[in-house]
Length: 331
Ligand SMILES: *Cc1c(COP(=O)(O)O)cnc(C)c1O
Image (cartoon, rainbow, N blue to C red; front, top):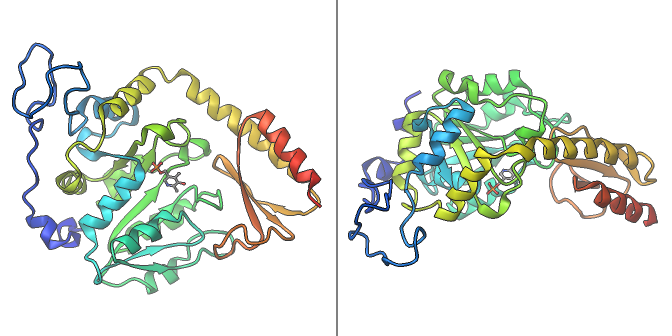
């Protein structure tokens, strides 16, 4: 696929902002920097951060076996998603496809960017409807958003269906893997070399337990990453965030244990929910939350296929006990 044909023309022609730190990413304390109007006092955070986060990306590259040239970092994955809209979707002309019920941010970003959001409902098993997706797309369909495991339904999309969509859809296919570390399945990262239109987003907000630092990761072909680098705010990942993420990646001893505990607690909550009188169905989950159908969870979720459902995030075992106690008290 020729990615350049998908990019907005003004972005292809854009001369990016050249920041003072483009050439000197490594602010060695022995060097003298008098080029960016920084304050010489207050060590380390007096300096602008590395605009391309090379140290952090090098570690991510080793951990995930993806070259640095195929990684872009965002101020949360929400910033990554917004950059994709701004790079590829011409306002009022292009469109994107989303598969409700799904993550609400795709639609909000489409509205902000004045891009038509074509909604193709998941089927009754919460899987993508391939024919409907292809029939609803045209030459202005720039991005298809696949959230797997999907929020709020908690399931993974079938590998075969995703492969078919990667072959048939003529724009970018974004796989949002915000919950992949809770799942039993592998990330799509190893498939990057095969598909020039594949974009994978991940986040430090969920399994890594670092929603507060705002760090999202985008993996794609070097061409797509180069385009996104051109339009991102120069210093979008601040120094404190880069430091915290590096510290986490170098000492990530507890994170696997936390995932284990959360998944164990997920089973505890699933079993306990069976005894709640108004619970009719507990959907299987590959994420850190459970979707439950009740006899009248009135107006909780305003998404299609989600009438009378509630979504519970998995907490600590004490929080589960309190949740169950509260649910049992409901008439
Ligand atoms: C929570 C979540 C994110 C995370 O967004 P951040 O901006 O990285 O915090 C992304 N996608 C989905 C589907 C989510 O549920």
